[in-house]
Image 1: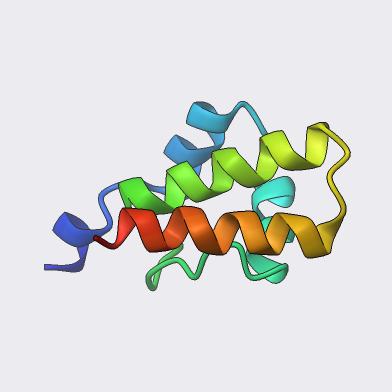
Image 2 (image 1 turned 135 degrees about the vertical axis):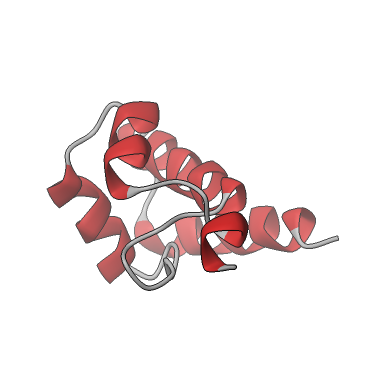
Length: 78
């Protein structure tokens, strides 16, 4: 059942985002997403990771990123 709710593997997430596993692990450590067991990701996780990546690349401070990502997460939960 978990595979259906979190269909994307770490390798697929890396490919989608164009980043390394280490970079995704850093975003997980920051609390951007909480992947399922086995490091599986939902579509919403990938959207949040992509948003976090773009905010970081734009030089947005962490505290502002957190606010923005919470807003994105809330909009995805509707």
